[in-house]
Structure formats: structure tokens, C-alpha cells
Length: 437
Length: 176
Image 1 (spheres, one colour):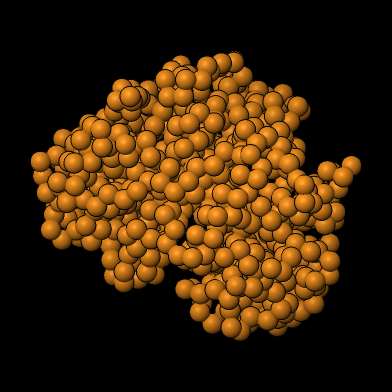
Image 2 (cartoon, each protein chain N blue to C red):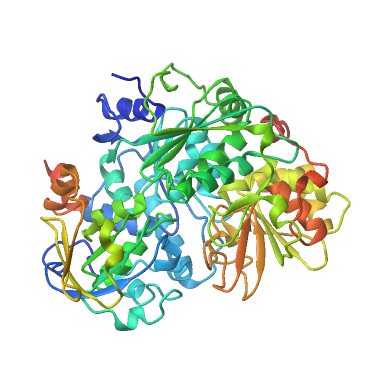
């Protein structure tokens, strides 16, 4: 019998079985999360299955955020927020409020998630936690509501699609470019029902904030999760970031003889910056193919690329410069701590001097709710993860996806611009920690 | 709010013929339930906006017992349960697609909305009258006098559905 993949090992550990791809298991959930859109529906399910006096499976490992419509952009959103606050208070769960940030940023920053954990979130980008070696996966509100009561959930153990990348990335090329290329190669449904696993020397040398980008967008190829084997980098990142002691066992690496659905190999040095054209993330092309495309709005933020390092890359490019007059730039930090770092380090000043609008932390216009919605005919270049028809507003608008560096370079010229034409920086995991009070 | 998960006979019977509403490939959750409407969790309210940008006539014309038929990767994108819930609210009897995105498939099963993976679904044209035999995994097209095989649900999911779905299953577990 062949060895096991990382995904099989994680679900074996959580289900107490010898789990293999294709098996159905009931597994113990470590952390459960919902936000202001998916929470209220999950609460109904929870109340229904538990009766009036239901208790959470683990209040200290249950987290609710208010991030999608935050601050409230309408009465119904405000009522949803109150429902989250009331449920969290009544059941003793952790709750983050308006301006605290996006669920996926907060759970990692605040140390709720660690390597080897099984994390379910009522949000499709819950794959993000794979970047620190947790089995993170998105579920619906009924799944979440029942798991809140039992601490268990059923899973089909996924096959694994492995992406191996070796070599050094060019200047101006980042994890975002890698994941857009992967999605372009396997297609929007190329990893459906499967786990993505990212490995190779390039991935090993990526800082954690970039690994999280790869895992975040596993869902854009249909992935159930997107895993990077945790290593010393993960350990030191989490210990520095959260103060938690991290114990890396030996169970978090795929066996050499593990059985993969397929292995895709890449030469990092050959990869150009990528842009996904409207209206699907799988439409990834080299930036050179779309360079010169005129844009109306630039959007920096989201659970994909709204971290401090991402925004700093943009600020570095715009320092002392002015955003082209034909475009507007909306910046939405992923978390309050990112926002505060921007204030402390002068990034806030640099960006506003250049002409950017900076909003409070949250999901921003990513899903077309508020804070920079697009009108008919608008063209946006975004560091986001989705560009479906109407995603950021009008059905007549269009969204291109790219890395923060490509957005920064494009801001200078008002058209899609190859970031290799400007000076770009790359940050390791220490830049966020070093300015902490 | 309607209990969308009743599983008590309140759902239309897919064995009864109904109109097929045919959609293409990669219909994502934003197209099923545009994000500006998902501040609501009410199936009827959500149903009134189902496919609003893609096919504005859908919500006004769909009748209880109709079917949604699609190509590859139906329900991709967000985890929002509002999307299958909007179809439950619209009285859609079952969704027949060549393939589904994982979370949508899971959500639909959990809600008691039958979903069938049917590679031959592309032979169905908009407006055709169809019905579905869930046990046999067969889709019958009355308009074209054709049948198409669908994948039977795996045993685990069948037992989940037979027990009344995830909520009933969980209730029984908690009471046990």
C-alpha cells in the first residue's frame, strides 16, 4: 500500500481512522468560524438541532467575525451584525467586530489556528489556513451550525493535486502570480473535490504571508483545501506572531510514496507576473499580454492580498509618486493590526499622499457590497481572488486580478503595467513583527 | 422563515415532471444569488432574486416543481448556502448538472435539495419537460423522449439523506 498524503494524514488524525482518499469520515473539528453573512443562518441551524439550551462544542475555539458588510452599509446588515454579537455573547464565543478585520486574517494573526488543526469556516476562502499546515476548508451554514453543536463533521477524504515549484522567482513575481498560473493551468474546476498541495524549494523559501496566498486561492480551482507542509518557518512565524508555543510533530509531511492524482512541476525563474482577465480567475496570462489595458479603479486588499507586506509593496512603488489622474485607488487593510502598522510605519501617509483612499479593515468591495463598487463599464485591477461577472458591482464592469506589485506599478501609469518595469521589494516574515509595540 | 430543511413532504417530488431551466458551465454563486441580496437568509426573499442578473425572468416565471439544469461546475465560488437556499425557496425540485462545485453540492445535500451529477445533461434544452428518478439515478426528458443516466449518491450520503439530512442526523446524534 502506498504512503499517505498530507491531507490523508491530517484527516486520519482527526477521525481516528486510517483515512484514504475516497473514504467518508467523521472528524473532530478544532476551530469553527462564521461571519456576518453566514453566521445568522448557522445560528438558526444550531438552535434547531440543540433546542433552546444549546451549548457550543468549544466556545474558546469558536470565532465569529463581522467583516463582509462592516461597518454596516444598511439596516439588514446591521441586524445581521447584532445577531452575531448576541449569539457570541450568549454562548461565550470569541467575537471580532466592525473594523477588526477579515476572518482569515484575524484567525491566523490572533493564533486561533495552528499546524495540524482541522478548521472549518462558513466561508469558501477558509482554505487559507493550509498555508500554516492546517486542514482549512469552507463549509455552508448547515454544516457549520451542526458542527458548532457536535464538534464533528463528515468529510470525503480528498485526493491530492500536487504543485511542485523549484528555483528563484524573478523580481516582481510573487506567490499571487504562482497561484494565478496554477489556476490557469488546471482550470477553475481542476481541483474540485481535491486537496491542493504546494511543495518544492520555491515554496519552502516563501514567507508565510505568501504561502497563505497560495492556500487562499485553492478554492478558485475548486480545491477543498490548499496545503503547505509546516516547517521551521511556520513555527517561528507563529511563535513570533502569537506567542503560542508550536510543536511540529513528524506527521505533517506527505510520504515520498504518497499517491497523487497528478503532480504539476514549475520552474519559478520562468514565471512572468500573471494577470487573470475577466471574468474568471482561470483566465491567467503573462502581464505582457494585457499591458496597456486602461483601468478606472485599483483595489488593494482582501483575504488574499490585504496583509501588511502586500500593502507595503504597493506603498514602496508609490512613495513620492502620484497615482495616474485617470484612476482611483481603494486600499482596504485585511485587519486592524495591518491598519495600525500602516499608521505606525508611514505607509498610510505614503499611500494617501499618492492619492489612494484607505478604508477601515474588512472585505471592502471584493464581493461588490460597498466601499468602492464598480459602475457600468468600469475596469478594475484588483489584488482580490475573484473576477466573476458583476463580482465587484455592475454586471457591465470587469475585473482583472493580479499581485499587489502589478497593481502598484499600474497605478503609476493608469494602465496595466509589468511590475518588472519598476523597483519592487519582497518582504520576509519579520517585517510585520518588527514594528509591533 | 420557511423551514427549508423540513424534508417532510413540503418539498416538490422530483418524480413529477417539470420545466427545465437550462444554464451553462461555471455558473457561480454570485450568478445564482447576486451578493447584494444575501443580507437576507429567507428562502422566499432569496428566491425572488435568484439568477436576477443572469436571467431576470427566472424568479417571476419559475414554478414549484421546475428543475434547474446546468453544465460543468455548477455553484462554484462562494460557500454561501443562500444559493441552494434560493432554489429551495423557488420550489426547484432538483438540480441536474454535468458537475458541481464541492461546497454547493454539500450544502444542497445538507438542505435536502436533490442534486444529480448527469454527464448527459447537455442534451436537455431550456423549456424541456423532465423528471428525475432519484433511486435509479435516471433523468427522463419527456419533450425529447430520452433518458440520461446520473451518478447515484455514495452510500454515506444516501444514508444521510434518508435520515432526513444533516440536521435530523445531528439531532438524533445529540439525543442518542
